Length: 223
View 1 (cartoon, rainbow, N blue to C red):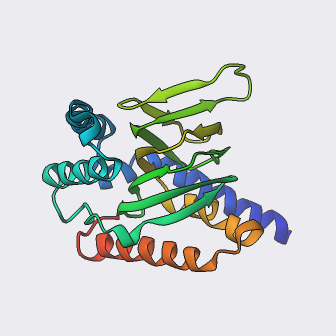
View 2: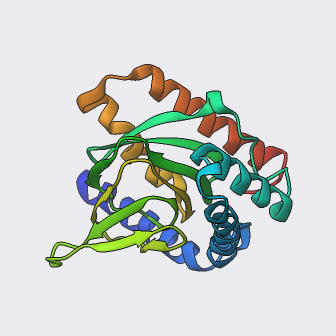
């Protein structure tokens, strides 16, 4: 009986979250995938015209500035070099900088200087991955050939789906997720306990994520 009660509670919670994902939760969204892609592409075009005068870091900083101009400084964190952290999830290692984190959305720079490959995870959120530089490859299990995403293209990972993905050397993206963000966090943390044992990076990731979620909930009144 106790097991049935627990399963019933889990089922009820899942049903409620599924309903709110399409009704109440969208009222909290600040960002729009199409707008993010448009802003990213404007900056990419400028840096492509610069050629060898452009650097990856300059590109990322300029994307951040354009995002802050459009959405407001209160929603977009400063570009602080010391707040980049490693991220190990699904067997893939990358680097990320949190631009915005709340309970319903996150916006980050994610990428890799040396390349990676792994599992996307299965999430209670939609994920939009706009390539800023380099290339991302992805595949569903039945695909013998990869999906290929290059600078300016957005890879939409729909809620509930999983893919294998890989990124080439010096590939970076603007990643936007909307949905039940806390449900995504274990995927980003568990590799610490099962393989890397990098508890310092885990601490910094939890601190930076929690700090921004608290700021947006209390200061910006945004869930």
